[in-house]
Image (tube, rainbow, N blue to C red; front, top):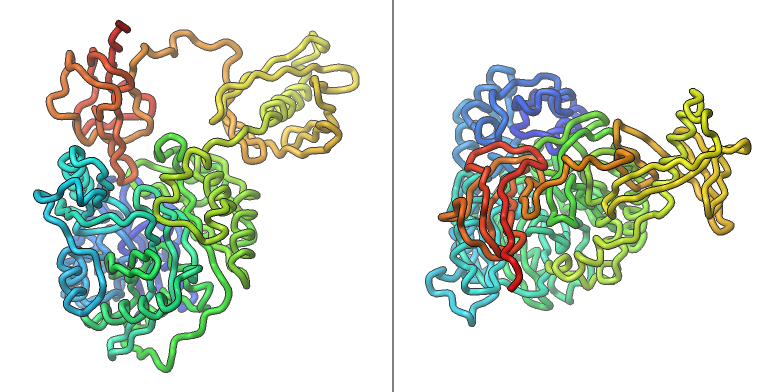
Length: 623
């Protein structure tokens, strides 16, 4: 029997595994980097061991340090979570060689599926349908579009869709660099890209006695950068017979490699066609939707299998529908740029919320941008979607910019509600989903709440009837609002101020009474779901940057610079110039105009803060 588990991971997944361990009276051990010294998973574990350093390469990817930590802390088992070393066969062997229980599949099974190219060979031999890899040197226009994909790892890293033959060489290099950074293996391959396909997967659990259970299906078609955003179970609107074929292929894949534990077999589905993509030899981020529909705890099953238990009888029958949305600290309108800073408040009441953060925690630059997974369950798909969208819409999220509004609009989009989505959903609809009219009264409510707070100390009384002005910035631009103090109270043109307090403003607008909840953290004001930044009354001219300045859109590390790029180089508008690595993803910074690079301040390996000046492009004068 397992008595103490070290989770070789961080954040949300570590907290998720700890929760089941506590329910089973199993002691928990965390490992943490210097950047995670005060992280939630570090705080909630029964014991925690420091891994010196901040980056994943220095810490969570150091298998020998993690094994040593388990032995030092007295753990008798290791759970890998997902990401990092979860699909590293050498790490699994090191855990077993140290006399510890490995809560995962046999190293040989991990090894068989670790290389997606080798996995495809095994699946082809087992009769599982798949897309055959292409020789990168032999790809022609007729083969396009194609997908460049990392041979190791997952999570959408090291993947590129190539639609122009001229882009293939550069995308191969970029994908390889990203894969090397994320997984320590820069091997990539090329395969056909199926337009309008759906990403459908099967959760399997296998014991060490030859039994394999298939837990229904999941649809994970809504993806950005090949990383899942919204997932659901069961997969809706599958053609007749497809689910049975998926189950057969998934269990055949597991038996082919003598699998044990929890795993996921992923497929691309297009109509009646089913293509094997890969097998993830670990727990998936989206496992909660399967847990909700089948009424199981997949982490508990992992622990049970690791202890040698049998899966008796048949798997439980599914019931109802579940939908999960990944809440990211990122700005979808700015090329999904990750965001950092203090998470002042996170509350999504009424549904399951799996998170690695609490109020006041810091969102750093070193790790994935996911804040939480919000999961709603209901008897029907329509009810589950409505419940999740409503919960996210009412959520309180104060801190870095998030994708919350995108999630709500995606869940309510007709293509999703009618189950007609595919993996290109965001390619088609991102512009519409990120273009929304701001609440025009949010800045006024912020100003009135602030005015109420200051009026308590008499700061306005010298000129009570003079108009007051406040300026704010939001994702939609800058806003200037005006109001007055009168003997009757605060007034503003076009609305009736029914009440104004520091945390609540009530306005009557065109005969409709509206409430505005107001919270302030330093220079940030949150009015319902609108985030505002307080601006000085008069802008500082010194803060203006020269035209053509390339600023870092996020904190991160300069991963690389375009070949041959130096001061004086001629550049074309849209040319990629600098790549930043932040939150385990590469972000391309392009030339804003055709002209000459007049300054280059970025160097590979350099750590930069948001807003740092990286380079300057002087635009060519018009002819």
